Image (cartoon, rainbow, N blue to C red; front, side):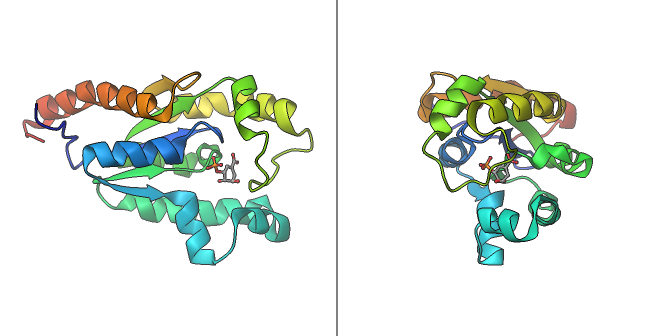
Length: 190
Ligand code: S3P
């Protein structure tokens, strides 16, 4: 069977809370689609020559969000062809949500707070987002963000007990109707 081809004009972006596997899964999906993988946070850190945690600590979250918005605008302005993993808070700004929708198809990787707390428990690289810490922080921040993830997402994948390879396979399956609809609408092949 030939490899599934997502039409080049359709960008693919992954959104979701920290610990949902956006980078790991994004890299796998990019490999399966034969596309370049871009991680918006990694691009930002490479440009600044500093960690995101250090930007939060030294300059504050608002400065980080400005830089995040600028990198996202740049990465989503190129037409399709890439798989883009985004930072968990990228959906907070309306301009970012609009940029993601223009870019192409957005997949929201979801998981319950308890699952995320387990996955993130040994993580010290990420900056804290509230004073609450761990499970309480995740539950609060996630419930505030869920409507925003839902607003941008064309596909929602429950990552709960799934290994990254299985999540990647679920994403590819979800992309089949997206590609068919695009072909029907534009009259073009992949
Ligand atoms: C953030 C998530 C992080 C990073 C920054 C802020 C957030 O990305 O962008 O620490 O607000 O949830 P990951 O989701 O890749 O950890």
